[in-house]
Image (cartoon, rainbow, N blue to C red; front, side):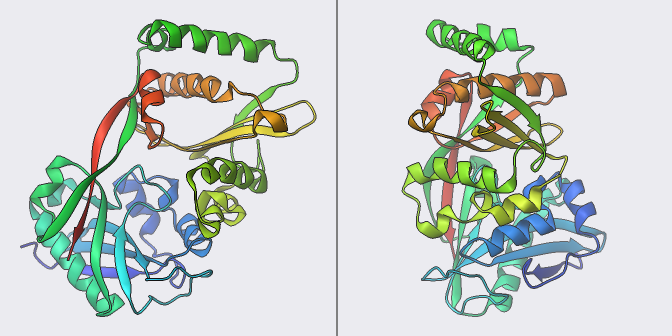
Amino acid sequence: MTEGLTVRLHNPVADPEPADWAALRRRAGLRANWAWPVMRAGVRSGADPLLLAVLSDAEGPVGLVAASVVPPRRREAVSGRWPRLGYLHVQAPQSSALPGWWLAPSAAEERRDLVRAFRRAARRGTGPGVRGLLWRQLGAADDAWLPRPRYARRTEPLAVLDAPASVDAWLAGLGTKRRASVRRTQRLVARDPDLQIRAGTVGDVASPAELAHLTRLNFAKHEASALELRSGPRSTLWQEAVAGRDDVHVVAYRDNAGLLLGAAMVLDHPTWPIWLSWGALPAEEGGRRHLYFDLFRRLVERVVERRAAGMILGKGMPELKMDLGARLLPQRAAVTF
C-alpha cells in the first residue's frame, strides 16, 4: 500500500486553480485540454460537471483522474454541485483519444491502491447516489489494475500515425491510388487562386466563433444532440479559452473574400500531438472537397519537422486513416462498481 496516500477532489467550475496545477500538468505531459481555464470552459459549455482527483503520497502527486459526473438526465447548464444521482465517466477532458487518468511511473506497482483510493474518495465526495464508473481508452495492460466486478467491451479503435523519415517516405508507403490522389490534391491546392492557407493560434488565423461553427458542422454528421453540438470545442466559450495558446495549433483555409472554408486544431505535445478537430464548409456552400487530404499531408510534414514520435489522429473514419498510413490501436471500455 502506498504510504501516506491522500486524494484531493476539485471541481474546475467551483474551485480556483490549485497553485501546483500548471507544474503538475507539465510533469504529467498533459496537453492544453487539461489546462484549468480550458477544463472550466469545457464544463461550462457542456452537460456534466467534472470531478478532478489529485492523488499524492508522502513525496507529492503520483496520479490524476478526471471523471464527468453524469446524471440520469442531462442539464442545460452545469452548476458548482454534483448531481445527487448518476455515475462517473472517466475520460480525458474534451477528448476521446486518451484516457482520463495519469499515474506516475514511480507508482506503477501501486496502481490498484491508487484506483481504490480514488473510488473511495469519489464516493465520499459525490454522495451515495453516484455509483459506478465508466472507464474508456483501456488497453490490454489495464486489466491488471481495473477493479472487479467489471463489464468490458471493445470500442472504436484509435488511429495513430508513426512519424515517417520524411513526407516523401510517407507518400512512398501509401498505396498507388492513394499516393496519386494526395499528389493530385497538392497540385489542386497549389494552383487554386482563390485559396489562402495559414497556420497559427486561435484568434490569430481564425476567430473562436469561426472555429466553433466549423467544428459543429463536422460533429453534426454524427447525430449529436443539440446540447452536444454546443459543448467543448464546438462552443465559442471553449475556443476563447484556448485563444492565443502556443500549445494549440490551427491550420485555416480561406477564400480571397475571407470566408473560412476549413480548419483543423492540434493540441501540441513534444512526442505525441493530438489532432483534436476538423471542420469544413460543404462544397455547395463554397467549400473545397479535397482540403482534408491537403491537411493530412501538412500534419505529416509538421510531425517530421518537429521530430515528434507521431501524431494521435483520434477515432472515426478508421479505414480512411489506415489508407493514409495510420495504424489502429484496439480500445475497450469497462464499467466497474
